[in-house]
Image 1 (spheres, helix red, strand yellow):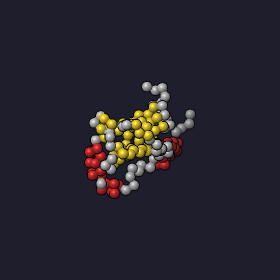
Image 2: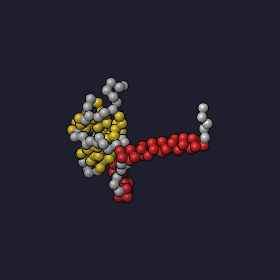
Image 3: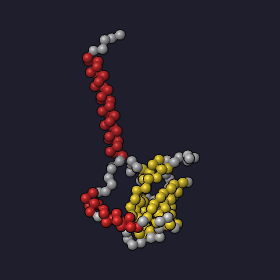
Image 4: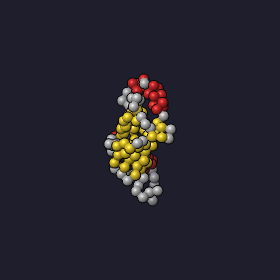
Length: 154
């Protein structure tokens, strides 16, 4: 058996830390490349009307839920447990929580309080960035988390 020298220990240490640093750099580059992290373009401008926008949205009293089954996305807007009567318009951006690669804007059709759209979603965690407008012009924004399960999963 060969003797372990200081040179061997140095080479092993440099290689071990080189691998760790290399993997960390690769993961950091991939993270930045696949998720921009941008919520709003200018946070200062967005903050100027935040409190008034929030108060108007809370005054609507809307509650939103989303379900996905058999290739159909269903978004339901209710007020005090009843269909929200004053939803004038609803749009959404559906995408992965960690990437913008598969983002899609579904074409919703309305049936009372439920807005439905045919959509092909693979299993995983999806975000629905919902924007709706009431009949009085108040804007409603909400991010709804949707967990799509594999077919046959309980």
